[in-house]
Image (cartoon, rainbow, N blue to C red; front, side, top):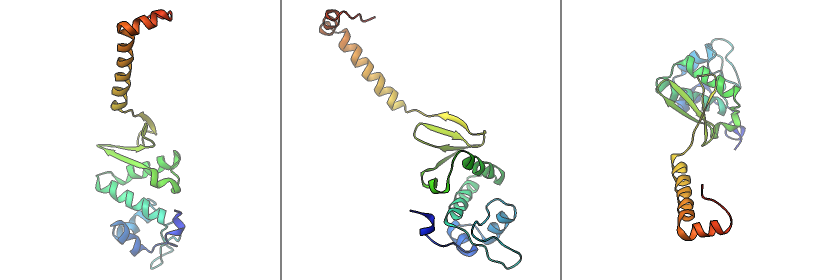
Length: 162
């Protein structure tokens, strides 16, 4: 689904309602350059802001990170790292963030995680279940090869066990 199909944009009041943030927080974040409305920026007192769907998603994520105790400066660094590492707006649905203590990690796939606050340091992830299954398979092969009939078959083919 394309973001443009969802809505032509959201007012500050709608964005506040959708994100759980106050209009005052949205105003503050806009003035600080933290999350700016991409469709229509404020142009003085009483002017309207228009947020895109992607803006609202970013605001919701920022609000969740903020509620988890992550400071605005660190959230900003995460957003910058995501953009630098290829976090396109259209790919937001596939992004998974993990907050662990002082780290914010981006799970790019089931096998790799990137620490967004440490210059995009890659952390490899592997399943212990996979290691257990691989080891069990190797043990089964070794057992077959070590059995008397398995050993005679191997010797008949000229192979040695070790």
